Image 1 (spheres, rainbow, N blue to C red):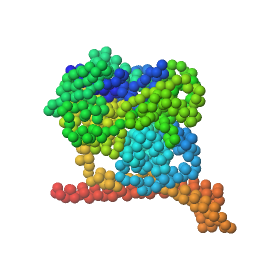
Image 2: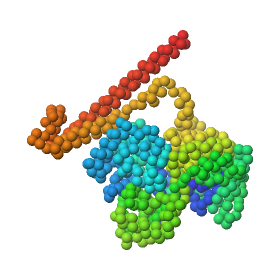
Image 3: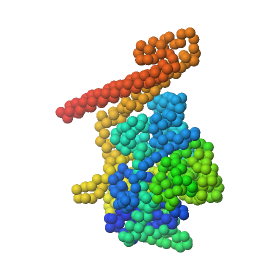
Image 4: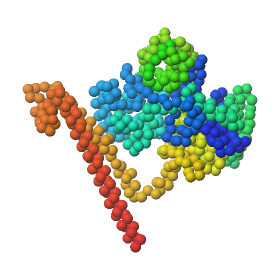
Length: 602
């Protein structure tokens, strides 16, 4: 056998598909009895549901083409609607300023603004944790309202212990400024034109759920002679002198199967891969593998006798007293996810670990908890529930604790010593990849088999991924991998631009505007509350500069708006002046350096 692929999730199936396109014979071993990994679709009495809900969206044209090629008209374009439930209110997500303001109220919104202004002037550095990363972009108060509770439900640990790397992958390019910008522009793009995945308002989705996609991949491979063997759990990987020679796998009947190949591509959990190697790796590598942690996942599905429950695809439950982390309405992903249009299937998601009590609860107890919480949230009535089921998924999410980066670096360095073994996908790299990123690692790994040189570990790190078609029709996928070379080529001007970062005029304008507006508002309110025969004679002088301002309750609101507007203009102008001076200084330094270089040559 030329190649053996371990795992029939998005990464493994894409690797096998690309190998087949390249004329390389392969075979797939999958430990489970169904393909798709966590992107599978479960069918319970005709009601289909995901393990977590999976949007199909990618910035990589080749991935989009593969999806469309597989499903054609069965690949639906669906509208996205999602909200956050917090403190009895629903907030649009992605956040919208007017909606958030209405839900929070004036006082809380003012505190959010001051909190954001504070971090703009004094950010928390260095950004090592998720808490710091989000607080620096949204302010501490907004972080505590919209990010902290839900994130800690997902990971089962304080945000101060979660690596900032997770935030850079999941909500990169998003900040309060981008939320404000998109409130008015509504184009889902950042200032530099990049698509912000969190802000997209439409996505693709298979008619019968994500598992439909991977079942189609598997059947297409089977028709081409590539077999996928289910219920084949790899437990031994034998290697010698930097090459994997063969693997041993067990079927459900405990029958041992051995298979040799020239190349091995693995999407099995990275910790399990390391622990399966024979001979065993050095102790340092084993300790690093043992340090990798996973978060498990429980889906409680309720069949509700109501045609319409809520309009969202999904709702995030940030309310602390509710154990549920998120609720899916599968009917709103695709109408064909339910066999009876008069009924609705809801997916209640609980994040847990195997050692937690909730993981071992009987299904009946979990279903009862789900019904109780849905009633408490006002989604349904108890007597509307007609049926329910529970699905548990182990190792659903790789945990981004503070030790993850170092542990993965050790394992990556060790695995680089194998010339015919590549690790791909979410669990194969212990990285929170989306489907398209996982597929891209599989595609790169397949092309490496024929001699191309792609770094599968570089996917979903810092670069954007693009497909090009060269003049000979050959597809290429990756740009921007020469980051190290770019850093080497940086001249003095580039270094100065990094050292003296530009100020965002909108961000500084918003910050100064918030401080000025709220400062005048609270100063006016304080004087009004203090009272007296002549209230605020000194502050009253501002009426000569602010149209309509007086030390009255109405004047306080007028002053808030006008002072905020003036502060915004001042902030924008200051940022522009700062950036202009920095650019002038850089230009001057560069000219001096070039002049000195010419003199040295002469």
